[in-house]
Image (cartoon, rainbow over all chains, first blue to last red; front, top):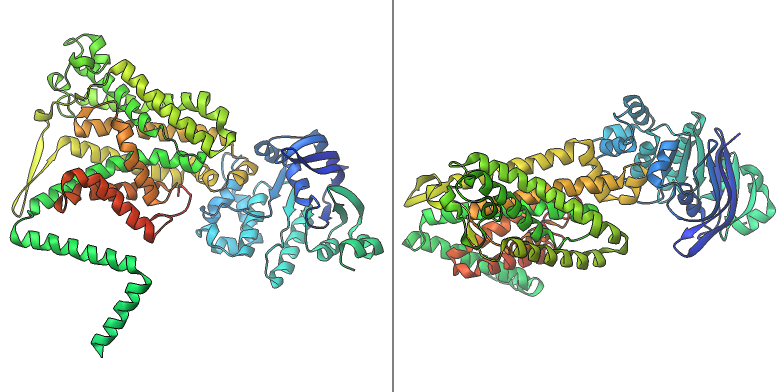
Length: 234
Length: 370
């Protein structure tokens, strides 16, 4: 049973159409990656699921509920979490306040979820009174993920979680994502670091020019001669 | 060798930062002038303290009035030029209530509600003051806040919200239109005359002896200080401690991210107008209580100083707005030590420009309410 289904989605910004007829789905507890060249529309897929683009056609279904073109502030109520690629923390708020904002829709801050986030990312607890804007890129990325995990979402959308990280942190970040997925959260991830992402995920989509090109198990895409030639640099 | 080193350092400073050198020299001259004045008796200590107190009061007014502008700037992303006329509207609505309560039975209700338009009633005759008619003053102050909240919400709903997605310039020009419309609506109802609102003679004064003379502090100064500092503290606690306050800071920081975390942005916008409008109305009322006169231009004339304070403090920071307000107020009042009092405003703007040249982002830079 698929958790998220995107069916023939057309979307863009204003009059500019970016996505044409995109299909994709994420099953329960599955780990799915979208790879593709710059400007392929990878981030636009994520934004469209969260209602941040101009809707032009098709449907988005989540847990049997039609969430096509739902306002961003309502999507979060359905059980999805989203970590945008950039500007993904409230720079002027401290770490703990950022996490509290992650659970804004609840009446009280869920202490058990906060505990879990701190256990998963101990650096956040050490720095809980620090302003998010003064932290390093890697720490901000962890904070952004922690914020999205505060509501214990069924599906987590991650847009380029390794972007801008020092090489030694990239592996650590991918390990964290594996852990989150192992704990039962489905993942839909966009990654520049295509080879590593495909190695780790269950299934991968190759997106080019706003359209689906290939879909297969991650490792199968890695072995596919055409995909390697065109999208993975040989 | 020491002398030549100093000479070289001086030359380098003059060529690399000529402006800093000029400002430094001017500052030294100002301090020397002041010290000489104090030593020779040309400048009296008690006057110095009086000017500082007057500047502090003006600073508190400007600071309090700046918070609302700063909040709507940082959360809604636009500079509301009608802010000054919100102050005036708050002042008129609040003073109408004060006149009504203080003068009920002594004068007809119409002239009381029109705040004595055309010289039909005078605040002095009614004995308006914090000690002589405390209930009328407090009720008026509260109504000024409530009335301005209603006005701000009304204008937002029917004027600003429909054009909110058109960008900052459209909103700004629209707000200029709102400013004129409000001001002349006030003129239409209340007239153009500047009226005295308080019984100036019967406001109790505290006279303190300072070295060579006395410094007078009256009951309205104290009322202003208590109300302004109390409200500033309240805003601080709201922003730092409450969920709504944190959501307001989050939204001013990053609106898109606020939306995807489920913060209901329209609700936060409404809360911003409620809090900002309330503070603005009370500030307008307190301004009039403190200076003792009320005219349709009061808020508009104060607006330039408010903008100066907001820019000086770092646009969008409410702590910057308060700090900027104090600097502007103190400069405007204390400049009379050196220059004729008509130039007080000009001096305040000069200081603003000089500070911005060294710190272009403002003292508390960053577009954030925190």
